[in-house]
Length: 241
Image (tube, rainbow, N blue to C red; front, side, top):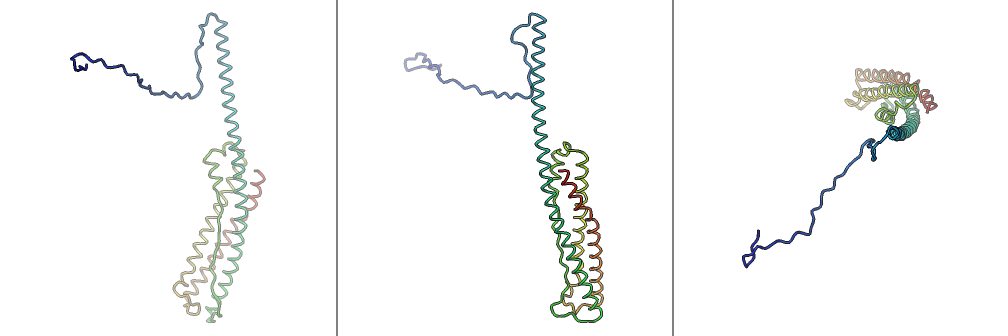
């Protein structure tokens, strides 16, 4: 209550502003079945209502199944395209890696011949050197791992999936063996780190270098043996896609 100057009660004017009520957002999830708006007076009305609800539910379920089927179809097609592109890339990379092994084999054989001359107390010629170069690009399995993570493999033919699994498992085995080869190549150069002058190498250092070259040649043969089935497997997998 508020008094004015005359001591009378001063009535406050009603506020013209209205407090806005907070908006309530309602989200509908799934399907809703509502009761009939009109009262049911007979069994005929009851059955008509039941049939109406049943038809509505069947239509909704059919639409949901159709949408899911389209999604699965799109996912399956996209997975096949990604796998085809990745296998084709791996096919080119793998063929290049095989050519690296051929070059490395020739260089290691030349290294052994030079080291044997050094062990026979012959001097290295000007410009002669040992070659421990290696190259391996390695393959990719991104599309394959993505297909497993998204569940797309469950939408594909089981026999085709088993074949793809064999392809990627074999290429992974080869990549691991090639990685071990690169490590062995690096270890084989340890005597040259101690004594880079070929004509100053001790007999023990020469023998260690020869053993390293021989071990690398054996490892190359192992990688080549593992690789024998990879390219044919690529071609067979591409025929399935």
